Structure formats: C-alpha cells, structure tokens
Length: 117
Figure 1: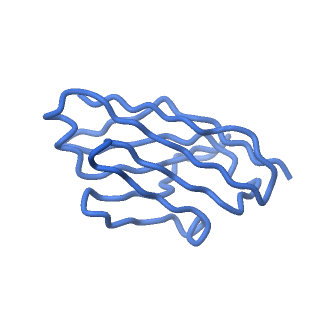
Figure 2 (figure 1 turned 180 degrees about the vertical axis):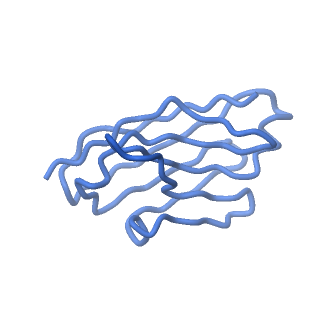
C-alpha cells in the first residue's frame, strides 16, 4: 500500500504561482514499485483530467492546457513529486489530486487550488 499526502494548495490571483507537493509513504517495497507519479484535477461540474505525469525515468507528459506554465518533477529518493504552477488562470481552479502507480493506482485526498480573476 502507498499513502499520498498533498500540500501547497490555496488561493492565488490570476498570473500568480503555486507549488504543490505530494509525499508518498508506505512499505519500502511498495514505494520501490512506484513507476509513475502524476497530478490530476477536477473542477466543479467537470470530469477528472490529467494535468501532468512523470515516470521513474523522468519522462513527463502534460495536458495541453498547462504546457509551458506547469512543471512536474519528482525525487525518487524522497518519494515525492512536485507541480510548479505559473501564470495561473481562473480556469485552473480545481481540486488537484496526486496519483501514484505501481501495479495498482493510489490517490491522495486532494488539495484545493483557487485562482481569482
């Protein structure tokens, strides 16, 4: 089992920045099986969507809506992923969820990001 804890959400004005962190914990054997971590978001009335993912080897993918503004990174030794968000827009307002993948999927509780216009 893997537990995920997000932090770093909050309220920011449009054009501002936030950095989300996701710390994974659990049995070392489980943590060593994490092959991908990522961030997803769900805005009110909308479906859950992928924001960014990164593999253990450092290969990242981004939602087109955030390319050039968001950067995902991860520390394998610390079992932590980060999402640096810049030039935030009101459309980025959502609950952001951390995700980790082994042979199973694990999710954090979510952290609210609100961007005011």
